[in-house]
Length: 443
Image (cartoon, rainbow, N blue to C red; front, side, top):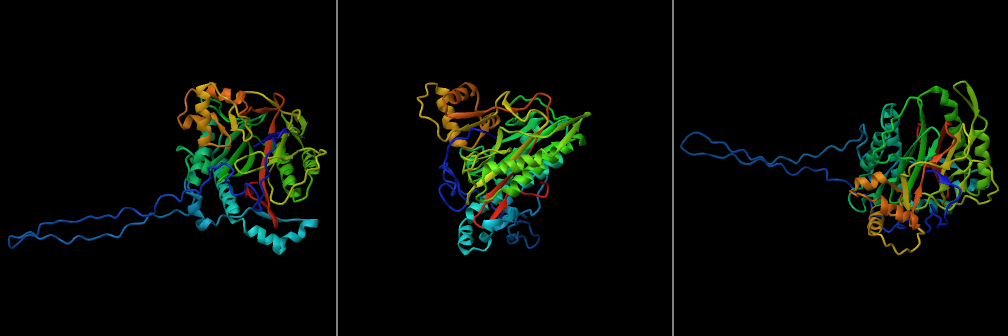
């Protein structure tokens, strides 16, 4: 999920067990449900028959049948519906791509103290890997099944319902979405819209063959958010645009590490992206990094932390640190390489640093309670309010935004007629290795 250049100041999350890593920052975290019992109720099927002869009716003895156990599927369905915890029993979820540190941090791979710090983070890593595997399986299904002619609402609901099924939390009962589920509203951003568009109720937009669509999906388990995105295009003339951004993101992932300065990292990303150009309808465009949308570190229950990862070289000397979790995301454009707010808002989030305001509007008070109990500081959209039964909430929601209690995040748009692309991965700067937690066979 994209970040503009003005992050708020919050406490930093660390992989190595420092404040906030236990996922209790929201105050509502709990272990995910283990799912339903595998056993059917005992089946007692007494058979009574009348036995002829000697004038007496004899009953056969009741035979107890052994209870049948439901077979737990070890293969994912389409659309995805099998709990990830069933596919990987004992919380033994697949690791992401592990990359050894370079240069002065190479010692970390075998250092006993660092290995010990790594080993005490089993719950943290288990939650992150469960969320990442959920992300991989859902996006694999989405990439195979998204086709021109589908509405954006249909696509978004398909992705989000799949995520909720795989983590075992449908988010309909109070507080359930805080345990596990969507890390933020699914972004479905077409053409010049780079980020922060998710269909609201009544959206009739249909995906076209000529569209370039950025698909930005967030999955969380106990507040540990995996933020990863890809771009889909159905016309090969956009291939170089997608290749440029994928290369830039992979460059950022490769060069990221403990003690790396964020401004210098942006320079590596910029150099990779600007080495490409793309011919669209007979016109050749240089691929520009979108300079005012950045990657970011991720905190428990908070998608945007205190650090920003630029897509261009800057003078920011802030260093990446052991224990940081980062979303490395880059956006490329055939337009200006700068985005502005434009269009109907769908993305909202409760501010963790919200001021204490005496709300006079009763609908705002009521809605604030609903947001706290159902989402906490996890971003949400209007469709999420609709599905938990909220009605006529816009006046109250706008009042909360105006009061500074809830943040609104309009779509980020480049020049009209331009095309934009996005790729993104979440990385964990563990004490011993860098883990690209969201890495898959697709990207």
